[in-house]
Structure formats: C-alpha cells, structure tokens
Length: 365
Image (cartoon, rainbow, N blue to C red; front, side, top):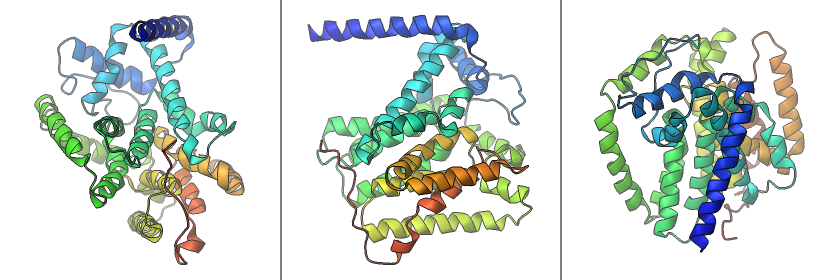
C-alpha cells in the first residue's frame, strides 16, 4: 500500500513539473551551458555516440563547449534528453531551483532557520548558476550531503551509500570536487572510518567504465583548453592579478596563505566545524586553478553563517562587493567575492589563542 502511495505521489509530481515546464518553456531564455554542452551531450549519448568525442559548435564563451564532466553526470542529464530543447531547458531550471533549495535546507543544522534561507536563494551567487544552466548547485548539494554523512556516528552501509552519492555529486565538477573531498577523506582516514572500504571499492568500480568511454586524451585536452583560454575569461586569482597589473606570484602566495590558515584553524580546534567548512568552501573558490562566476554558489554556507552569527560581517561583505562592482574591472563573479568573504569570516584574533570551543555538526536529530 505504501509503495503504491509513493508511486502515485511521484507520478503526480512528475505530471505537475512537466505541465509547468510546458507552460513556462516559451518564456525561458537560452541557458548557455545547458543549451551548448549538456543537452547536446545527452542527445549524443542517447543516439549511441560518445559525447566525449562528438562535435560541439563553437560559441562566444571563450572556450570550446566540449563535454568534460564525469560520466555519472550523464545519468542526471538522461531524462532531459527525451524532451525537445525548450521543454528540457524548463525542466532543467526547475531541477536547479529544487537542488538549490534542497542544498540550503541541509544548512538547517548549521543554524540557518526562519527567513534566512530565502535571502540566500535570491543572492546573485545562487541565481547565476541557474541562469547559465550550470551544475554548481549539484556540487553544493553533494558537498553538504557528504559532510552530514561523514559526521554520523552510525557508520552503516546506508550511510556509506549516501556518503558515496554525495561525493559523486561533488565530483561532477572535478576542479572543485577534489578540494572539497580531500578534507573529508583525510578526516575519515584519521578516524579510521569503516566506510572508506566502500568508497574505495565503489571508486574503483566507477573508474573502470569511466576510462572505457573517456578518450585517453580528454585530460590533456582539458589542460590544453585551460592554457589557450584567455586568463580574463576565468574567475581566478591570476585574472585578478592581471587586471590590477600585479605580479602573478602574488596569486600563489595567497593560495599558500589560505591553505596554511585553514590548516591552522583545523588543528587549533581539533575538528571540522560548520564554520570551518563554510570558510573552506570559500577557500576552494580561491585556490582552484579554474572557476567561473556560477561556482560562487559554494559561498552560500559562509554567507548563511554570517547571517546567523556575524550580521555586520555580512553587511560589510555586501558593502565591499558593491564598492568593487562599481569599479571598471569589478564584477560579482570575480574571485574577489570568495576572497573578501573568507578574509572577513576567518577568526584571525582567536587562531593564535587558546582552542576554539566549538562543536561539530550535530546530526543526531
């Protein structure tokens, strides 16, 4: 009886979403990344072609729109390939909105309650990924899911599978996922977490088919694209150094400062707290060699922490970004956003004092 009820609810929800998509499809503007990369990739896949070797039309985005994502993103894209582009685009927008809301709901144990989640939804760092049709919101959802499961005391197979799902979602953007997963895996090794065996076996199981369908030149091609792409097209420290006509070695120095600070913070409090994770997600946007404006959705946990515990810091951040955007070279998607938020949020005054009295994320409830 329960199975029948759940099946009916799923079918009803699917019918409602499809109806909404059909109604709003004519009014949704093109989504660059979805239209030019993700949708063609899944259409090639459904036609029996390899999406990694298929032809993609050149665009004005500054780099080839080729499909570089891991194969498991194709599983997420699969249902959208059965619809015409306009309806698929509308459904994709609905999915991204739902994923963003779902990710923000996972911040409730971090103290984000009341109307604060609604404020995070309307921030530009939340909306820009939806406007591009990008998958950064999926990375945020996977990150928060993986963090929640990593902190569970009941290390069951079910928890391990949810942790694996979170890491798979995180890895749809490897240039972010690797940095997100590293502290989690180090923490699990340190705690001798039994779920590591499941992650290792599943990882090897996924790696073999990935290598089978991914051309051996894909990684080298991705690196080549990074080299030929104009630095000003990306939202990295190097871009900012070029805009300010500053030496590029400052970018490497800033990365070392960020890594050293986060390491000192973790060592100082002997645990990875919500505050630490919020700052780390901002740090990922600073240290990664490749990021775009829509990846700024990873800032939402830190901005949420500011809204809950440091409201004047949030005001200072918004004021600082408004001042920066008013400059000829300023834009909301710049690395300046995570850098400013990170600098404001890190507890500089207490890092050199006695250990911070803070607790890890409580998932018992």
